[in-house]
Image (cartoon, rainbow, N blue to C red):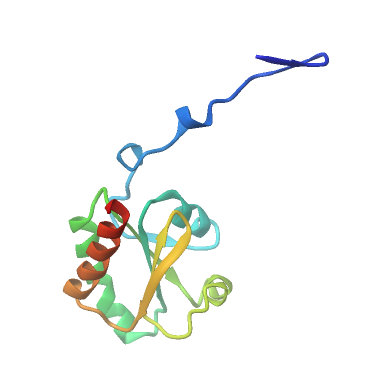
Amino acid sequence: MIFLGFFKHKKINLNSEKITPASLEWPEYVITLDKKNFEKFIQKYPLSVVDFWAPWCVPCKAMAPRLRRLSNIYKGKVAFGKLDTQKSHDIAKKHRIMGIPHLVFFRYGKKITSTTGVKSVSDIKDLIEDILKKKDG
């Protein structure tokens, strides 16, 4: 402990409380995001993918089962979320989303890359694998 004047201050070892990817609680499915949980979600994981979509968007609906499949494939490595741009247009505007469906890849809250339009599971897997290799390499 450090004594400053009359007050006791406990020394905190920041390294001892570091969260590793293995110790994280990874989502079991694609998380529905909104203004209450978006920032916490993208900052929590070493790699997260957010699908910016809207209910009226037919191509966006095609992406939903693909993301569910990818969330099963990458369980414990990648967190997947979806954000309704109609309900959270302020977040979409902040991230400069001009077209949907739009996938944004984050590393601890920092945007790594993004892609617009309907993508195959294989295309998204290729992007994820490239990102994971760069992180490990």
